[in-house]
Length: 172
Image 1 (cartoon, one colour):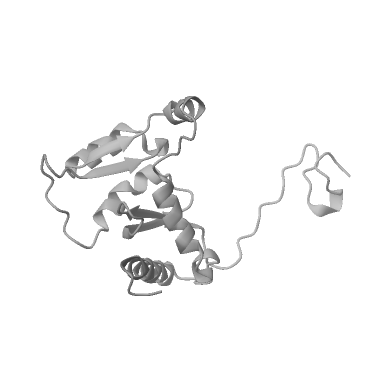
Image 2 (cartoon, helix red, strand yellow):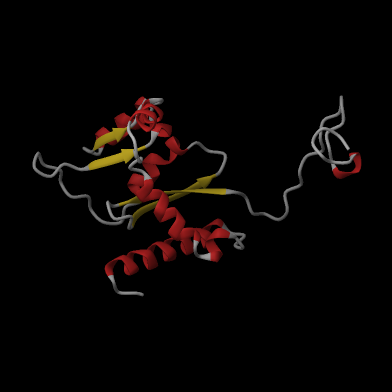
């Protein structure tokens, strides 16, 4: 046994040697889904890209994926977008401003301080996290069986439609 609890024949890293590369089985690659939701958690936009890509690079594709026309923002009814600290970049802020949307992005370290100082503090992004949880309740989405990315994206759109119908009370 070594320090990681594995025997040498179980693939542990031996001193001085690099581990063997992990073989990729089949043409499937890991994907990352970026979902845009309304205030109730109903998905209104979806973009998919490789899992090795940072989420901030998917903001433009996610905003452009909304199938309906955005309402014109006015001083009485501005459009708002809540993002977490992973999107705290000037490029993202500029892109959101180009869509005439007010960005609410927590700066790095602010949320940790609020969580420490304010009892019972919860982040606003729980709405999107809940939507991801709803999507993962569909086994076909949680365990990706599709080899083609197009088929998987179509399945994600189908799941988003089911979630929207359930939120509207059409489906049980």
